[in-house]
Amino acid sequence: MKKIYLPNYKDGSIVNLMASIEKSLGGKPLYKPLKGFKPDELKRFSNIILIVIDGLGYDYLMRNGKGSFLKKHLRKSITSTFPSTTASAITAFNTGVAPQQHAITGWFTWLKELGAVFTILPFVPRYNNHSGRTLEPKAIFDYSTFESRLKISTYKLYPKKIVKSDYTSSNSKGANLMPYTAQSSFFKAIVKLAKLDRKKKFIHAYWPGFDTECHHHSPKSKKALLHFKKLDRGLGLFIKKMQGTSSIIIITADHGQIDVPVKSRISLKDHPELAKTLALPLCGEPRAAYCYVHAPKAKQFEKYAKTKLKKCCWLFKSEDLISKNWFGLFKPNPKLLDRVGDYVLVMKKDYVIKDFLITEKEHFLLGNHGGVSRQEMLVPLIVVKP
Image 1 (cartoon, rainbow, N blue to C red):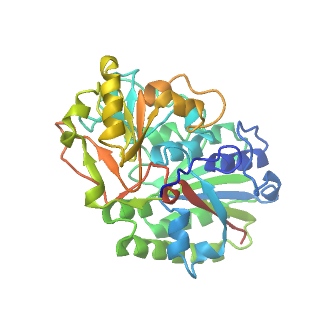
Image 2: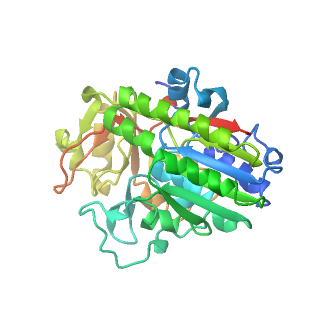
Image 3: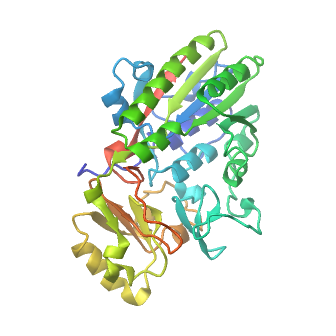
């Protein structure tokens, strides 16, 4: 885990996968298509189906997938985004561009427009967990969605409990949103859509359950493995029902996960001298923390991070990571720098760093992501043509 694994936005990431799909449907993507997965390969199919399994890393599949349906149809590994987290990577699937453009930079995001740190996917202020909002989410999610650029019928499957959320609704413009409640209804809905007619369709189906198991029980847990095996069996049965539908099924993930032992948990309360240098709570992710630093205390912050936390993290200036294309290629969103702070603590090995507001109980997840380890950054590309 000493090596830093960065996204390959040139031709090897989930962003490039979306570019292959978009170009095959007559669009003009900003990014190049994925190497080894040319748009021409998709053109002959009536149904292009993208299944995103939240949290399923390439290394997890290689380690636990012997004899599985998913490993049998594995084509190669591709990279996530930076940070390698749901907020940034799922938004890449939803927009077809990288965080450099969409500027959704992590679970906790400083929104200068609102003067508050938001938990961005539930779209609520971090401090009170309910929105009570006075603005439309489109004021924040102000980019074009992937489906809005397509000139065909498009569908998105999301769990019922989040299908009407501000984030899901705002990031699904142009698509027909459909809820599901269980694995059986998830696959049943895809089959039904594929058999509707022979017209060209794009179906995007999102499965968050595996990620949830890894977060709460660890990616090394039996519960995560049982979930993986059940999902894999379900996929195998689902594919049989898809025969004769003129479908290509692309299965991938937004990121992988790592196990975080108790000894690798860093709480900001144990580092009061570091906390004194910060103007805002830590933002981003426990594996990639954005630090908003009081300008007069910048040298103090740097010295502390480079000495006291040297074994735990790398310290980067946020603007340097933007210029070095960690967040994506091309012109950055004007809001990006505001949302990644002054510095980024990129965690080494299996370390995480967290702070807790006075409204929050101290809590660490067993499985984490957002960093630059191989386990977090590499995801599988699985292609099935029933």
